[in-house]
Image 1 (cartoon, rainbow, N blue to C red):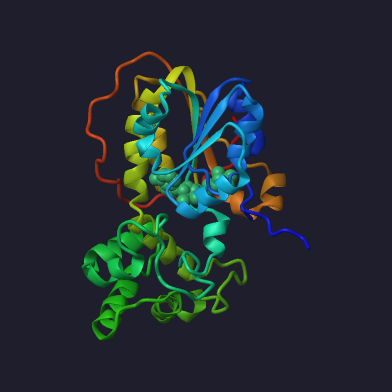
Image 2 (cartoon, rainbow, N blue to C red):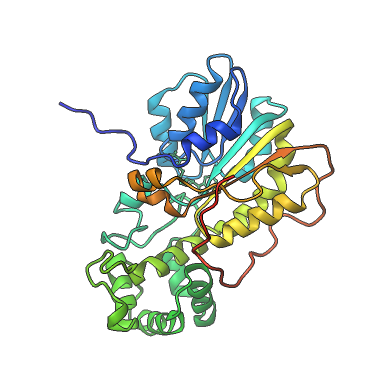
Length: 328
Ligand SMILES: C[S@@+](CC[C@H](N)C(=O)[O-])C[C@H]1O[C@@H](n2cnc3c(N)ncnc32)[C@H](O)[C@@H]1O
């Protein structure tokens, strides 16, 4: 009998990461978003038996899966990448040679009906990376005011029918809480003009299903994803040793903007990638999910931590989701 693969997630930009990270045997690396473990495995192989890799994920299922792989020299922890300073202290590691963040969600999470990330499979509307913490998406939808809901769908999902979707959600939840993926999807379809709907739960005629945008927005809000990236940009550079590298892959223009500005304005960092690194056409053909990935890399230089409290509010506003394709 063939064994089920532990993960269906395909790691993005693997060749570019190998080249830019300059991995060496004996180094200490952190995979801050371990997910299916693809990048973790890459790091573990490159640093070898005398090196070590800390694999972090907020999702307990991802960490259980990594534990089952029992990779030598990999330490797996269920935590946020923002907790890295405390984890290093716990492990007795003074500094690390590099950190990777591969933001967003994994294909494993998307495929799991019980998580509610995909509008294509019905299931409970949860959407938390860590289902043991915080509030599920359906509860957030039940309590948030209509204006915040509309702004969230507009800003994080770039959905121009956000006001109508928010109004219809609020009307529906007065009757009954919206607890499932199918219920929310139905409200979105009823709120968007018919010409803009695929109606099949997928792409048609090259159009993105309108549920994609609202589901993305809810996921970002429920997990405070932009707040996490901002806090990370404050704390992670201090964990790097001299010439240590910070690599961040983002899939959304708002995340990428936070990373770009943080890299540029942090006296502890020197930017290596003046423009973001994009996947090749061949990678996009092999793994279409990689198409919106943007990798930025910075290296640690001496300099004080910038002032400004971690956890400032996320920036708002719309940006083009179609940056031009550039290599470094
Ligand atoms: C795109 S996937 C990573 C895939 C991984 N690089 C691989 O090759 O399989 C993103 C992962 O980040 C995790 N994640 C999201 N926010 C996080 C946070 N603040 N701290 C740690 N992990 C987080 C998600 O649970 C998800 O598993």
